[in-house]
Length: 347
Image (tube, rainbow, N blue to C red; front, side, top):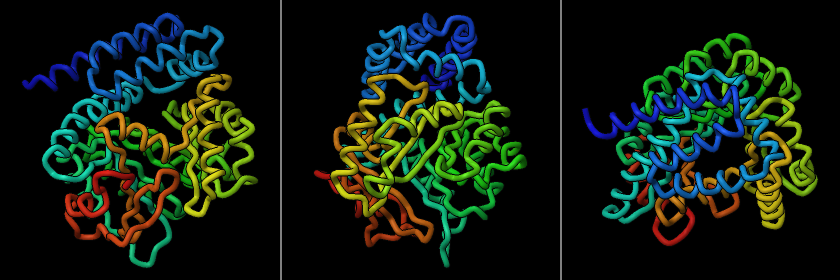
C-alpha cells in the first residue's frame, strides 16, 4: 500500500470522527478540524486556506458558524467526507504536486480544474470525448472538473455515470433549476464526489434548492452577471442572503464575456468584502478570479481552461472567459494546454 493511500485513509478516518463532533459543538470542533487539516495537508493552497479560515473564525458572531452547523447536520456525511477529501487532498495536494512536477518540464501551465460547458449546439462533443479529456487530465494532476449545464433538456444519466468512473475526483455540476427533478435528485444521491450548483435566477430555484436540502445533498447556487444593473443584487449583498436562505453552502457568480471591466472589478471587490464580513451563512465566490487565485497559489502562475459544447477551448483574461481558436475535439490534452496555457500570463 503506497503512502498516499495510507494518508488518505487516515484523513478519512479523522474527518469522519470530527464531522460527528461538529454536530455537538461547531465552534470548538471547526477549529480542531482546521488544525488537523493544517497538520495533514502540506500543499501550498492548503497552508494558505487553513491560515485564512483560522483568521476568519476568530469572530464568534460569524454567520459562518451557522453555515458549519447547517452543513454538519443537514448534509449527508459520506458526501461531505468524500467530496471534501477528493478536493482537499486528491486535488489540492496530490494533484497539485503532479501539476507542479509536470509544469517544471513541459513548458506550459496546467490548471487545477477544467470547466466543461454543456448547452445548445449543432455538433456537441460525445460523452467519450469528456471521458478521454478527464483521463488525460488525471494523468497530468487535474482532479477537479466543473460541468456547466445550460441546456434544460440535458440527460443527466450519462453525465453522472461518467463522474462515477472517476471516484477520486471532485465535481461541481452546475444546473438549470428545471433539471433538478425528483428523479434527478434520486440519481444524485448515488454520487458522493460532487456538489450541485443551481441557477439562482431561475424561477424554480427555491423549489430545486428545497429538493436538494430534503435529500441531504451538498449544493450551491450560481449566476452570471452582464452589467451593473444585472450585478446589483451581488453588489448590495441581497444575492448572498438569498443563497443562504435557500440553504446553499456556496454562491458562485461569474462575468459574462461582454461584461465591462469596471463591473467585473466591482463584483470581485464586493465578493471579497462579503467573505470578510461573514454576515451571511454562505461562502460567496467570483468564480473566474477565485479560480485563477487558487491556481496561482498552487503553481505560481495562474491559468484557466474551459471547453465549449462544440469543443472550442476557452481561456480567462483575468476577469471573464473568452474563446480561443483551439478545438479540443480529438486533440490530446497536452496539445490543448501547450497552445492555450503559455507561460507568463493568464490563459
